Image 1 (cartoon, rainbow, N blue to C red):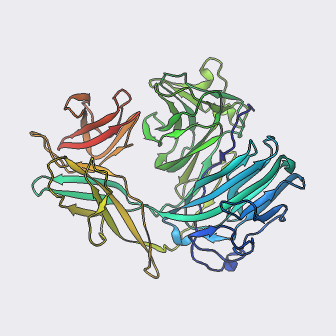
Image 2 (cartoon, rainbow, N blue to C red):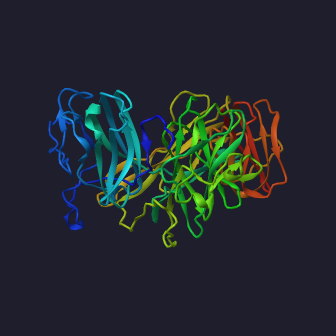
Image 3 (spheres, rainbow, N blue to C red):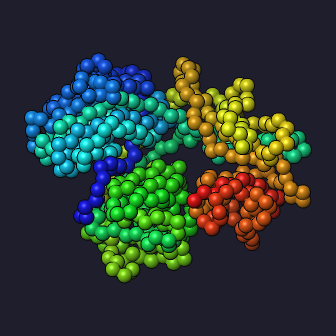
Length: 560
């Protein structure tokens, strides 16, 4: 395994949640649940106050009044020295069934006072999920580390009990003075609506909005698709200034569902972290989705995905563009259990090749893993050397959507969005009568979702906003505007723009702010279409989508 420098190792996403106190004895689990929001600042001076425990002995864990952010903090001391140790600090159980339509976030501050750089002493943060321990990230003793804040998404908060845990472990604790943990907090963020669409009614001078309700009914089996053995014997990179992709084929015939996250392992060199995206292709090598931009690091990097659908074989490919700076190497496993399947691919934008067919190439697989919610009823195979499966049985929903709020904002205005409905909107449609204006041609909109408790009807939360869209109110003379559901993403875009429509797309045109045509595509017959914008200068453009019924106009922002 090649040496690589770093100390934050993300191992995947979790499924974690919390709610009101209730006994777990009937479930065969000890203790009582705690509530969201949960905060631990150690001001009680005791581990017992909130039910913290030490499954294999307390070891050197103490509540420390000398260090904190502010004092006190939970601390694990390296003296007196102990060897080949592992001591756990675990929270009480939390119960996630009341927040199954939300995501849970874990926040905490971590400090390391180091003695020597051995890289053998670790603090691992994770959760125990229905009695199974799942590590989320690991910090090594690479150097002294002042207080550092961690904000980790723990996935969907539904249908399971869990604990959070901190494990101090290593070869010889004399390599550290102490680890310190403070300001632990669990909180939930409710799922927002999605697929917001708008249509300007020229005759009535209104904007008609429609959207999809939050996706709270995800069920199935959460699986990690892992083909590497966790170590890299080599690494690959696209030379600076060139366009290309490296990634893996995922041979999962007969399975379908949604991709929830992707993790990659990078080998640090003398380059700086680079901005990347990961493109997803179907079995026919057709681009179907693109991740948000992320930055490489000399460690595991996990990118959350927006529930990308898949059906059978797919490809996850890291994309280098001509604007990508000198970058780290994408880790490559050449001796793992699935090396013989030769799953690693290279794509130059035109031709697909096995990495093993490239000069100096050997059969192998990139250290690139995906996590998916596999649809119930699909046959599970024994294909994965490290698959993680959690059945997710149905539970009675205790979060109910009671309505939606609509927010509007003019462009080129530094003021905040303003709520325009006086009472919650009960359905998924709303007609806005925007105020007249003479200085701009449209408005920005987004929608939030309001949740109450199903039993008590008490207010629980207002979700973050849906995707924000811009609706143009002025239509050029001679254009017929059409009512349609149209999704354009990502916004802003740097490499590729994707269009999804419920109408057949016959062509596209991109104009700049002066009205000059910068890009056109014709003779199309698609409801979904993707096109590159890498050669467009950064700025604001007008995208015109032609259909058999008329033209749909959207503003797009290109940034590189």
